[in-house]
Amino acid sequence: MIAELGSAFALGLAGAGHCLGMCGGIAAALQLGGVKSTGMTLAYHAGRIASYTALGAALGFAAGSIDIAGWTLALRYLAGILLIAMGLYIADWWRVLTWLERGGAVLWRPVQRWSQSLLPLRHWYQGAALGLCWGLMPCGLIYSSLAWAATAQEASQSALMMLFFGLGTLPAMLATSFGAGAVQTALRRKGLKLALALLLIASGCWTVYLTAAHAGHGAHAMQQETSPDAMDHSHHH
Image 1 (cartoon, rainbow, N blue to C red):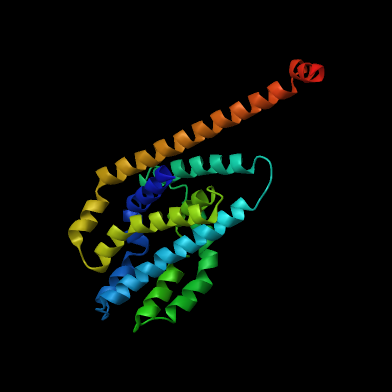
Image 2: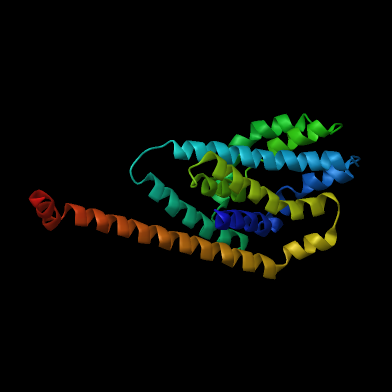
């Protein structure tokens, strides 16, 4: 589980450039658009991370409640493939996750309309509510992280993975909120993005390899159990 939490944190950190493009504007506006309250900004980020965590818990619970042969195996393959896709996406080698964003945009519109009614922000709880809305925005990185977290098939584990993903996004987002240009520049460095992207791709390949090895081992064990020799042996007993 520690490896998964580390990957989730790295994923949030690696998506810094993407986060700054998608949510950076709103994060900066909270601090610069006449709202000078640190509490408001922190409430927004707490709401955002809370929404990731709650969605992770819901999907983990849903995935764990499906009892179909081969479902766990399929989810593990999906986890590996998504990690590879996210690595390629963060490295800007293959923007495969943009189709997820296009689909999510349809679901996002009513939420966006409601979130605009919260502006301008005057109280910390409005900031938290806006953060909760923002967790649902059409972001390939968020959606694929959620799908990956669901592969844990357990509400608390999936929630933890999404919590660590959210914490990973904090350095970039807080730097935007508080105008820390040096932190933003460091997080946007090509070298860091590339290293983290390669780490995700390697994790994905390793996950797929382990799943395939496990599946092969399981099939071999079943074959042995149902082989004529084994049947004959059990018959004699």
